[in-house]
Image (cartoon, rainbow, N blue to C red; front, side, top):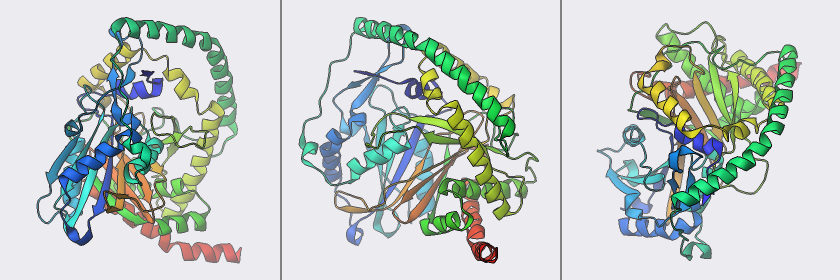
Length: 467
């Protein structure tokens, strides 16, 4: 039995009938000669690897009366309740796969069993198949999922043959006893946390006065954009593949980070989308960028070690190169503020979130569509995760591409997630109908934005040499 951290539990409390807090991982597999995969073999491979995937063997158990965050308990997994099959309509194009992902993303996960499922998609172009993994964000963040993928798709070692352990469900008395014990330990840490928070906030206030450019603040600085507001139940998904070499070339030529390049191509796509509809806000859009707080080098395969950096997309800047430079400068300031506040601050305070009050407020907020009645806290979520650098395979089948996308939240119905895989920079876009006309307009805009920056590299190199 293991208690969820405040961050992990918060991702549960944020879930409503319209806000699904799962992440999606889409692995495209190429079978030799386009042969059909043996379903029995796929099922057997997944069973063999369950001992290497501990988070997939745990289910939630709520504490009576919501007196503390839920706990994880290891249980026996019914693989047939998690593994599903679907066949794409001919010709099985990438866009048709995106439509299947959209339908799967629109359905929440059942909390009565471990919070994951895998959909195998047959009938894709070229004899390819896809494995769509839906994993609740409370189970793992992007860094942890990347490590899990190595176990799920890498070579099977002897440990994979060990029988996964199970444990009996705790009694209500046990849950309450552990809850009160944990609360006592947390309360002892509260005075030191309050003092540290006050000190860090004072430091942030001083730092903001001298930083140039000053990073934006959520709520205060986010303008309204077409994809901001209350969510609907359905989801729409789109994907695109970019050359990782192009992303790295832009990074090197303009002395920015890969994350800066990701923000810039997203900003260019969003700006193009809004300009085409004559609804571009005069103020620049604000992005939430999930940031890992991992300090250890050991691979982590569960939980969320996350904080958030808030930065500008500089969508008020028309020139793509100047926009990239402005994004890089603002992102550096935002990281300074984040470090000054303390990357662990969000995690530490989240432990004190009251489960029932938090979840009830979120459900009421969603049901009344209150996100339509005030300024959005942010405009878009943009994340970039370094994925596997070496090719992976599953059941003897080569993995040729890997996409990912995180959830959207009330008030910000647009999530753009980039995952690198070998020499690809794969981008997934998630939104909901009524907020975004067609997410493929965003993915197409991302490709065009990267092309613009690549085309500007020769001029930048000449400028640097001339200087």
